[in-house]
Image (cartoon, rainbow, N blue to C red; front, side):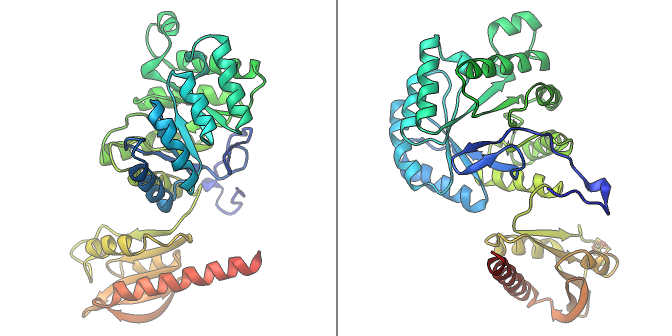
Length: 373
Ligand code: SF4
């Protein structure tokens, strides 16, 4: 990412990490910060799982994780991988055979902790399968499932214990001359996760997968993730993120993108700037924004749109957005294009009109991008 010399207070300098591949998605180095989610279907239900994968990918997920707790799941994985538009990470906890089956089934990455799968022979077999099938590995340390000896040493889950666990797992992979790995140190407590990630970032150059685990429902989990992931990303830590919510995976993807968009780390689709509305509004801002969010969901081209209730803030916000609408009076408002007043539009027709303007601008930008290739 290029740094902004005019507004240096917006700059985020990313930690320098190695780059690995998760299928065709680069993670780490100067790759865009990828957004992940995880399916919550029964994996052996190929159709249901694939449907979630595709909906998540359409919402912007770069990578999707699927748990493979049994042999039926790893068998289904082959069909899912074949149809999936994005690389699939197989989530394995302890069973080394599931890891080998998942690698053979075409998983792009295995989420497995090599220290948890038994003797050296099993570790060697899993690493060989990963290498033979072009899989990367994610080491996933979780404060809730730390190794007993570390809990005894440190007394409770703490950043030192989590990082030590992570480095132990890293060493096992390095001893097998395997370097295509990324790592996470998740906790449901924001302070613990943030401190562990900061220590981890200083201790390894491996790409880092960020997450606040078991963050909660849609609203509480979003806030918690925005604080935890947001503060780490702000300080340059994190190469790929997953927001964990007790909600549809599509919501996780949307929230992940919004966190990255808020920090200017990645853009996708229409970013709507809207006022909270008040008695001065010239049209129903809240309902309009709700409708526009739905109607513009399909737009992938990064673009900004300001929907402001009145002239108190409308013209100012419109100056900084690609397209703007500001409420006026007498049932109509002003449309702004690239910051300049363009034309009046009635409140009744403004939603259809703005959707048309955004679609036309997206097509224009896509054509320009194609011509530049
Ligand atoms: S921009 Fe106007 S309508 Fe919106 S909150 Fe401010 S004063 Fe109220």
